[in-house]
Image (cartoon, rainbow, N blue to C red; front, side, top):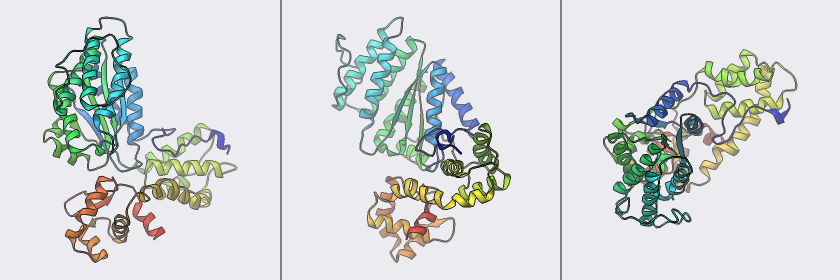
Length: 387
């Protein structure tokens, strides 16, 4: 098939040609956005799941939906080396300037700009000129206490949006990288938004241990947010994700071929996109058969090893890699820390620093006490292939 018109898109956060199996999440997001604008009480949403399940894609879809609901989206990606204030300052500036260009009263917008000027002054960052001609006012988001100032800043931004009959939604990807204090400040700020019925809410995305992080940061987090799990697709959904883009282009894939792709991917969306991409480029005629699936299997594996798996292990220390290789040798699906310690011939207690480091780097998580799991689907298979 012509690779130029290949409908599949195996890239980080790239939208698939057919977004299936996420209808409930998107419907809840639509309700959330509508309630934000109407200043109704609303729980925020924190999407959780393994790498490659499409959390970033869903955030992008919520961003698109926000514009249709007259809600201003502020989309950011958290990193381990960027404080939340620096992360949000420039996007908040853009949002306030967008509000300032709209018709109508502007006093609340000016107050929001003052609050942002004060806030960036306390965190000492430079995002260029802001609020030229607006007189400085003390007392708005300038105490130096992040938990207080962030809530004060969000309140001013939310009031500015309400002045223009708009709402604001914060879209924060990789939220597990926020330090506990900053995550706590964000949760506390969202608590104030809910208490005061202000039109600003948060939708985030993170790894499976995010609910635990949020609970540790603020005990009431579970009442402020929902934590829907974004998992693998069912076999029926996987077949639709592969079949529908092909059929739209007039290409048929046989049932046993679609089943074989599901078995190879276990329904994980990123893997489905890679398989669809390679099948499309390989076949010269239709229908696509199980023989075509077998013909591209090695190519798919090479692509996944080079672009999806390898980049995640290259930034680890040798001792961290040794820990992961030991995990991959455990023959049961539930990996216990004691099994890893036995394989490494180390006391369980001695592995705690490496385990903690790998959790912070987003490589593993603890599904239950005494257990450890990869955050990347099929990562153990990859490690066993390359050892």
